Length: 210
Ligand code: AMP
Image (cartoon, rainbow, N blue to C red; front, side):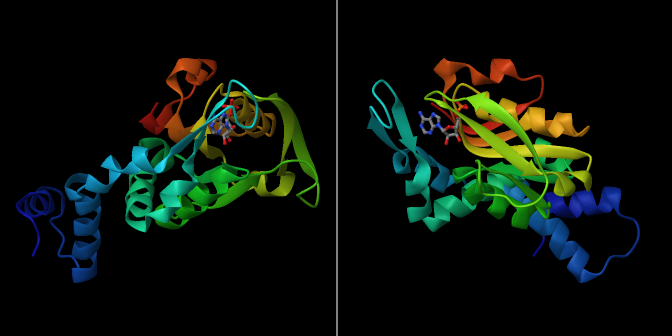
C-alpha cells in the first residue's frame, strides 16, 4: 500500500498513468529517503574501534572494519551514503585503496554509478596518471588508469575516512589533471580536529564526525 505522501506526490507530479513497477520504484525511493529507520546507524560508532599509537605513536587509528561485522548497519550506511547529493550529481565514482573499495563498490551497485579505482604503486596495469601525497603518517603515490577516467566528466571520491585530507586531495588532483570535475567527497568517518575539509573547494559529506 502506498503511503499518503507518495500518493500526494504522484498526484501532483504524474498525470500520466504509470505501470505498477513505476509506482514501486517511486515508493522505494520515497521509503529510502524519508521512512528508513536509521536505528542501526546508532550502532555505527560502536562498531568503529579505536587503536591508539597505530600504525605509529600519536595516531588514534579508527578501524572501520567492524562495520562489516553487522550487515544491517552496513546496509543502512550504504543506503545513506548512496542517497547523498554529491553521489547523485556525479556520473561516476573514484574509490581509494583499500578501505574505500569496500564502500565504493557497494555504493556503485546501489546508486548505479560506474566505479574507477585509485591505487597504490605497482598495482595497476596500462597507462597511468600518478600523484604523490602526504598522509597523517608517511607519504605515498596514487595512480588511476588513464583510459578509464576518459569515459565520464564528473566524479565523486569515496573513502572510509577523512583525516588531514591529503589522500582525497591527491585523488582530486588526478581527476582534475585529466580535465574532469570533482563533484565532492563521501566518507564514513571525518576526524574533525584535523580539519581536512578546509583543503577542498568541493562539498564533503561524512556520515560520522569524530
Ligand atoms: P588523510 O590523507 O590524512 O586524510 O588520510 C586518510 C586515509 O588514511 C584514509 O584512506 C584512511 O584509511 C587512512 N587514515 C588516516 N588517518 C587515519 C586514522 N586516524 N584512522 C584510520 N585511518 C586513517
